[in-house]
Length: 275
Image (cartoon, rainbow, N blue to C red; front, side):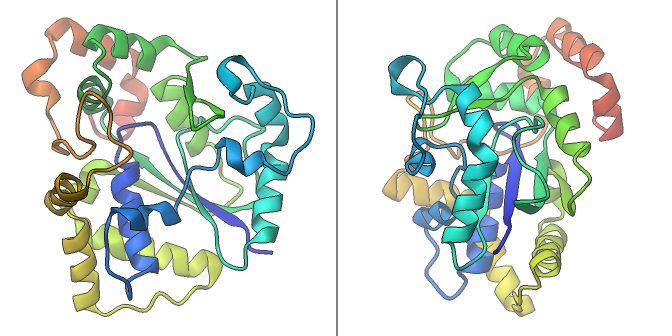
């Protein structure tokens, strides 16, 4: 049985960009487009629980979070056993105790981004006001998100990041979004090495092929592909690949908003050299 790998992050931290890179690593012999990203789907979606009986639903025919939590490790066992290849799943879930463990999970890649830039990106994507997003990111420990018919517990930014940092019983690769932008090739090579190591895969691409992957998945090309063919993960408020820049917060967040974020998140922000 292959064990799965998670690609985890708080929303708007570069998870989809990373999916594009990894999907292209695995499918380099095929033409790259945004549909390639479907090879790394969400775990917590309704259809992944089709084989389960006695499902419990909350409002709007969405699987109840408590029921999903009780069954999600068994769900991973089933998906792992059904697959004749490695499963890589995207998740925005905080890593609570029932979410996954080493019996089904081979390792994970976690992407962390400056929370001040997450606020800006989330604002444009969701249409919410800055203060509402900041309140969720800092204080809403029970914050949930709907993931195609199931629920994931998102929680606050610091609890989310810390929960994955504390998961040390499997191999992991922690990547800063900002490093992915500034040292793309080095990070891509680290990802290739990590994936080859934990599953003894043989992603053996030349230097020119790695450069091609970087070209395929750079932000400008992803924006171009979305403009040409749309992207089903865009919102009603914004294209999905909007800016991707770092330090956007400097131009739009007030001094009061910045102080609130930095005072409440200072331990982890210092850990990652954001302040």
